[in-house]
Length: 173
Image 1 (cartoon, rainbow, N blue to C red):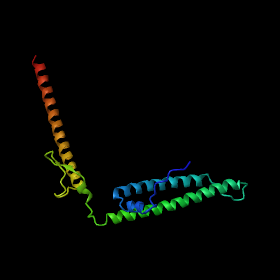
Image 2 (tube, one colour):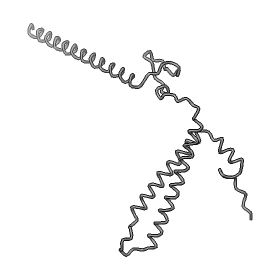
Image 3 (cartoon, rainbow, N blue to C red):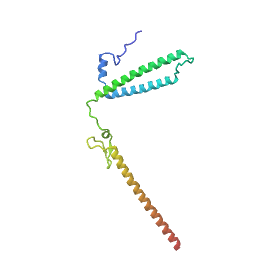
Image 4 (tube, helix red, strand yellow):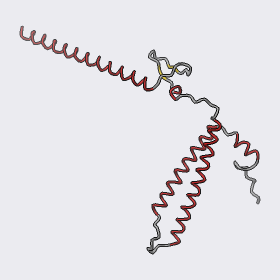
């Protein structure tokens, strides 16, 4: 029985290399994210191995177990260095792809709602910064608290007035 031929990998033939060159930036970012996750996972495994590993300092210790853990550790470190090189390649490629783009300020990417309730999503107008909006919200909250305090004072005055009127009516009877 023969096995079917495998599809060429990313480093296979010229078609695979051509396809690898035409990978868009979003795919590169996803690959970079997966690589970072692999780096974190490998690093956690390395720390786990180091935590369980005892150094041979003259104490009777199974050298076979030590050698096995040492080779695992060296393998993880080698894979970690490969992952960092891969991440560097992805980073360089992303920077190369995004080199001609003009950076857009983050403030322009966030849509906001105007005072009249209409949603403002145009990128051509002057940007409203989050700190400016936060300041406006703080001012509105301050005014609202002042109005609430005034209403509370009016309600207290009305309550006292009604109490006095009821007391006078009770005395007349």
